[in-house]
Image: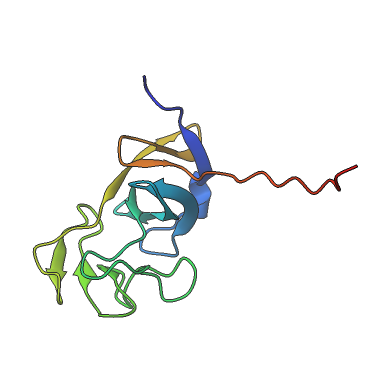
Length: 132
Protein backbone atom coordinates (compact mmCIF):
# COMPACT_ATOMS: atom_id res chain seq x y z
CA UNK A 1 0.00 0.00 0.00
CA UNK A 2 1.37 3.40 -0.98
CA UNK A 3 1.37 6.03 1.75
CA UNK A 4 -0.44 9.29 0.95
CA UNK A 5 1.56 12.33 -0.04
CA UNK A 6 1.81 14.93 2.70
CA UNK A 7 1.90 18.64 1.77
CA UNK A 8 4.83 20.58 3.24
CA UNK A 9 4.80 24.04 1.66
CA UNK A 10 4.12 26.09 -1.45
CA UNK A 11 6.72 25.75 -4.20
CA UNK A 12 7.44 29.48 -3.94
CA UNK A 13 8.55 29.03 -0.31
CA UNK A 14 11.80 27.37 -1.48
CA UNK A 15 14.41 29.57 -3.10
CA UNK A 16 17.44 28.04 -4.85
CA UNK A 17 20.23 27.64 -2.27
CA UNK A 18 18.09 29.41 0.34
CA UNK A 19 16.30 28.56 3.53
CA UNK A 20 14.77 25.10 3.76
CA UNK A 21 11.43 24.04 5.20
CA UNK A 22 11.30 21.60 8.13
CA UNK A 23 8.47 19.16 8.83
CA UNK A 24 7.78 16.55 11.52
CA UNK A 25 8.23 12.85 10.76
CA UNK A 26 9.08 9.52 12.30
CA UNK A 27 12.34 7.91 11.18
CA UNK A 28 12.78 4.21 11.93
CA UNK A 29 10.12 4.53 14.62
CA UNK A 30 11.61 7.62 16.32
CA UNK A 31 10.22 11.17 16.21
CA UNK A 32 12.27 13.73 14.34
CA UNK A 33 12.17 16.24 11.53
CA UNK A 34 12.73 16.21 7.83
CA UNK A 35 13.62 19.13 5.60
CA UNK A 36 13.28 20.18 1.99
CA UNK A 37 15.59 22.57 0.13
CA UNK A 38 15.79 23.72 -3.46
CA UNK A 39 19.04 23.36 -5.42
CA UNK A 40 19.47 24.01 -9.15
CA UNK A 41 15.70 24.34 -9.45
CA UNK A 42 14.88 20.94 -7.93
CA UNK A 43 13.42 20.27 -4.47
CA UNK A 44 15.36 17.69 -2.40
CA UNK A 45 14.30 16.21 0.94
CA UNK A 46 16.18 14.51 3.77
CA UNK A 47 15.77 13.38 7.34
CA UNK A 48 17.23 16.19 9.44
CA UNK A 49 19.95 14.04 10.95
CA UNK A 50 23.72 14.22 10.42
CA UNK A 51 25.33 11.03 9.08
CA UNK A 52 28.15 11.38 11.67
CA UNK A 53 26.18 11.85 14.90
CA UNK A 54 22.36 11.76 15.02
CA UNK A 55 21.76 15.50 15.54
CA UNK A 56 19.89 18.04 13.42
CA UNK A 57 21.87 19.87 10.75
CA UNK A 58 20.40 23.36 10.61
CA UNK A 59 22.16 26.36 12.18
CA UNK A 60 18.88 28.02 13.00
CA UNK A 61 15.53 26.72 11.87
CA UNK A 62 15.67 26.13 8.11
CA UNK A 63 19.30 27.22 7.59
CA UNK A 64 20.94 24.20 5.95
CA UNK A 65 23.24 25.66 3.28
CA UNK A 66 26.76 26.87 3.99
CA UNK A 67 27.44 30.53 3.17
CA UNK A 68 28.26 29.85 -0.51
CA UNK A 69 24.95 28.03 -1.07
CA UNK A 70 26.68 25.02 -2.66
CA UNK A 71 26.52 22.43 0.12
CA UNK A 72 24.30 21.46 3.01
CA UNK A 73 26.31 21.80 6.21
CA UNK A 74 26.05 20.29 9.68
CA UNK A 75 26.05 23.15 12.18
CA UNK A 76 27.85 21.03 14.79
CA UNK A 77 30.71 19.36 12.87
CA UNK A 78 30.91 21.28 9.60
CA UNK A 79 30.25 18.13 7.54
CA UNK A 80 29.39 19.07 3.94
CA UNK A 81 26.71 17.26 1.94
CA UNK A 82 25.80 17.45 -1.74
CA UNK A 83 22.25 18.87 -1.95
CA UNK A 84 21.32 16.61 -4.91
CA UNK A 85 22.41 13.30 -3.34
CA UNK A 86 22.92 13.85 0.40
CA UNK A 87 26.41 12.32 0.06
CA UNK A 88 28.97 13.67 2.55
CA UNK A 89 31.92 15.19 0.67
CA UNK A 90 33.78 16.74 3.58
CA UNK A 91 34.10 16.38 7.32
CA UNK A 92 33.96 13.49 9.77
CA UNK A 93 31.35 11.48 7.87
CA UNK A 94 32.99 11.59 4.41
CA UNK A 95 31.43 8.90 2.25
CA UNK A 96 28.29 8.69 4.40
CA UNK A 97 25.00 10.17 3.32
CA UNK A 98 21.85 11.75 4.58
CA UNK A 99 18.67 9.63 4.54
CA UNK A 100 16.65 10.83 1.54
CA UNK A 101 12.95 11.60 1.75
CA UNK A 102 10.87 11.31 -1.43
CA UNK A 103 9.75 14.75 -2.58
CA UNK A 104 7.04 15.46 -5.15
CA UNK A 105 6.46 18.91 -6.58
CA UNK A 106 3.26 19.56 -8.51
CA UNK A 107 0.55 22.18 -8.76
CA UNK A 108 2.82 24.72 -7.02
CA UNK A 109 3.02 22.56 -3.89
CA UNK A 110 5.83 20.53 -2.33
CA UNK A 111 4.81 17.14 -0.86
CA UNK A 112 6.79 14.40 0.84
CA UNK A 113 6.03 10.71 0.42
CA UNK A 114 6.44 8.44 3.48
CA UNK A 115 8.14 5.09 2.90
CA UNK A 116 9.25 2.02 4.88
CA UNK A 117 11.69 4.05 7.05
CA UNK A 118 10.01 7.44 7.25
CA UNK A 119 6.44 8.06 8.26
CA UNK A 120 4.18 10.85 9.41
CA UNK A 121 4.75 12.18 12.90
CA UNK A 122 2.63 10.33 15.42
CA UNK A 123 0.19 12.61 17.16
CA UNK A 124 -0.54 11.92 20.78
CA UNK A 125 -4.04 12.38 22.02
CA UNK A 126 -4.46 13.70 25.52
CA UNK A 127 -7.58 13.25 27.53
CA UNK A 128 -7.96 16.42 29.54
CA UNK A 129 -11.37 15.50 30.90
CA UNK A 130 -11.62 15.16 34.64
CA UNK A 131 -12.94 11.79 35.76
CA UNK A 132 -16.57 12.11 36.87
